[in-house]
Image 1 (cartoon, rainbow, N blue to C red):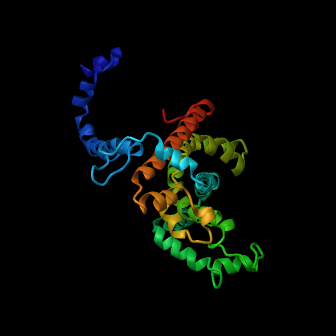
Image 2: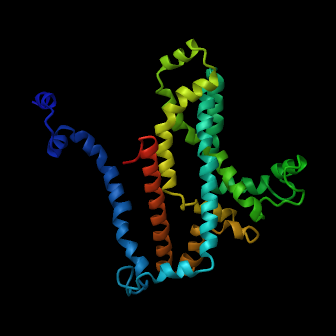
Image 3: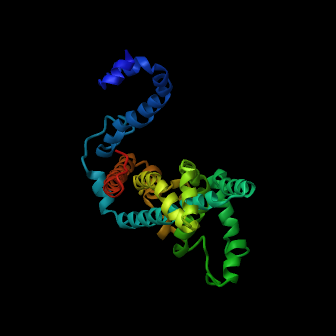
Length: 313
């Protein structure tokens, strides 16, 4: 009967799929429950951004104050500073960090020696498994103003001034944050691009050799087009979290000397909203950043659909 339906092209109902593929639906239940419990149920607490939080009445019993806490953040002298720092840090992370795993995946894919290929992959994957606390501790040792191996090496090559303080300077903070993030994550992030490259038809490579194409031409005309759908999808997802700069790493790297560049929205919310128990204010700022992220997500998705025909929806 199912073959007849498939042959006639008759549209199947949801009930048919539930009965026919019940094993797959059972496997989906844990994921569905996770999304419902941790993503959708907490959305009811968004109303805290519009209420005066009270320890006595909880998040549902406070007085309705409308956009009071949004206005408080917009009128704050730190609004433009935190917004600018967040955009700069996140923007540079995407601008420099997003292409890095793509280039690495192409380089690894070009290697023909299987032994060296495995060695390179293992080497670049290892930094991903270093915890944020350990990574920042390593940065404090390697980039120390006096005795830091990396900082002394850069000074010896005259790439930075002799009196430069890489960890205590607003000028260098963003670069240290971004470049250390690229070093830590590009190996692991290249896996998905390597998976996309592995699906390329080998006959295309043979055709390139017959036509006399060199490695650069093969990359431009075979590998890059194969990666475009993956690149677009991941870029859209990255744009959807442009204001969600990692709190833990920035917080651990933050000090009184680099505060002008390291005070982003997430750390400001922690300092003003959480430490001072202004939970309504923290919720309002969090909602504001999510709205901005959603706008960037939709804009990136629209551009992706228009230019490449690939998008999330």
